[in-house]
Structure formats: structure tokens, C-alpha cells
Image (cartoon, rainbow, N blue to C red):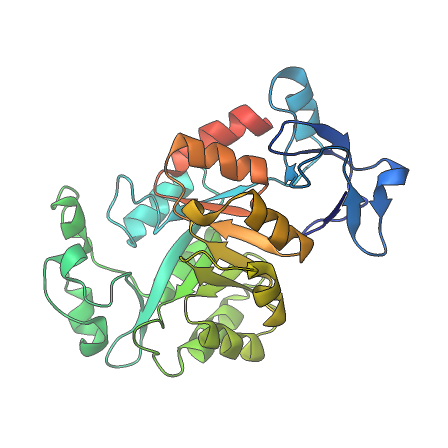
Amino acid sequence: MYYTLPPHLSATRKGYFSGPEGFFGLADSPEKKDNKNRRIRFENSSGIPSICMPFHGAAARKNAQKGLSMTLVYGHRGFSGVYPENTMLAFEKAYEAGADGIEFDVQLTKDGVPVIMHDENAVRTTGKDFWVKDLTLDEFKRRDAGHVKNGKFGFTPPPTLREVMAFCAEKNFRMNIELKTGVFEYEGIEGMVADMLKEFGLSDTVLVSSFNHFSMMRFRKIMPEIRIGLLEESWIINAGAYVKSLGADDYNPTVCSLNDETVADLRANGLGINTWTVNSEEEMRRTIRYGCEIGISNWPDRYLEIRKEMCGK
């Protein structure tokens, strides 16, 4: 049984590969490689291997030194389990916790400035009933995004995309930028985000995603070197073929829809998997076993502890 490698892996890379059933096979065994077609044959019967080290003890420590690929842990809207979501405080705390990156949402203000907020109407997060698109930047910055945590952290203004990019560029911190074009298309937002990425010299550490797949196609034309992921919360039949047909790099499904069949389909099409919102211990362990490229969680600290237990780092 063969496994098609996702874009970030090479069939020549040595390491252990494991499937949900717990079997292991060496990827550097000559009879199990097909470098030309970027495939590896596995001995296990599941055909749904994940990229990880053996789970415990000296073997895990030994293989951790090989630089094996494993699930990257991103803070969902930052470290939002504790701190106000989509704020600089939440992003800074995710970085301090050791997360590999952050996921956040971009909209446009009335005067066309890219800003960070999840809901199009921000009554939940700020306590004020307004649409992001209807406020100028000055008005937007006077809102308190700390309301979502009942004011526990004091006044916490929502940031601009420029503030977040400057922070991530300084820290070499990875980003999953979600374009919130599912309700309002925010004409021109794709170009604005691309221009800012170029200004800060960011490409290798960035993934751009959206539930609006037309928006993703527009972004791909503007900045083809950036990885794009198609967000989806329904259970898509033949998701791999669909994502591949649009030329996207990754599929970003809700974790509840991620099962053996879907993972096998996506891997057969050579696609990366970035899943959300991974909050329970079972979900964290399952996504690591599947070898998801990115797991997005409100609790990056807990996720990192489980990854360390399972993968040695």
C-alpha cells in the first residue's frame, strides 16, 4: 500500500512513520521508496500513516534529533483559551507558551485598513453592536476586545494586521491568516494582504486560508508562492480531488470531520492537512497520529505537552 507524500516531505527523509493502528515502518528502506512519484509503501494495513516518532522513551529522544516532521501547534486566535481572542496579548502569550504559530482573522475597516477580528459583527467580543466594515480604523481601535473575557485583562484594543505581521516577523513566528470573506467579500483584501506580506518579507512561514474559495483563487493569482488552504466545516465527499482541482496546497477541515477515510483521500492527493479547533485530549492525540501539518487550538500549552509525550519534542 502506498502513501503519497504531502508537499513539505521528501521520500528520502529518514524516520519512522506510524498509522492509527500503531504499526511502524522505516521510510528510508529502499524497497519502500518511490522518489520519482513521491510515494512510500507501508507495511501496515490502514494505509493512513502519520508523521511522528515512536511514542515513548529513548527511541523518541533519538528520533527527535533527526528533525522529523510533525504536527505544528498554532494558537487559535492566539492563546484564546485564557486570553482575549485575536489580540496582541493572546498572540504574545501563544508565543511565550512555545506555540509554533498563530491563526487569526482579517477583515477591512470602513477606510480600508486590514484589522484582526473574527466576527463580522463584534457584539460577542466587544460588547458593542457594530459591523467591522462600518467603522473607521480610529473607531475600531477604541473598542475593547477584552470584553470577551469579562474585562479580566483590562482594556484590550483589537490589533491591525500590520501590528501582527510586525510581531511575527520580529519573532519569526508562523501565521495562518484567514481572510474573512465568507459574509462580506471585502473587495481588494487579497491584494492588501499580499502587499503587506511582501513588505515584511514573509512567505515560508505563512499559510493563507478562507471559507470563500473564490477568494483563495484570487489570492493564488496575486501571490502564487504562498501556501493556501481551503477552509471547510461540512463533511465533503472526495475532498482531496476537490482541493487538488483548484490547485490549493492544503485542506483546512474542522477536526470533527477528520476521519481515516478523509485523511487517506487527502494524502492520496498529496495535500497538507490543517485542522481546527483541536481542544480535547482525544482530538490532540488523533491529529498527531494522523500527522496533520497544523493543529489549531485554543489551548496550545496542552497540545504541546501531548505532542512532547508522543513525539519527543
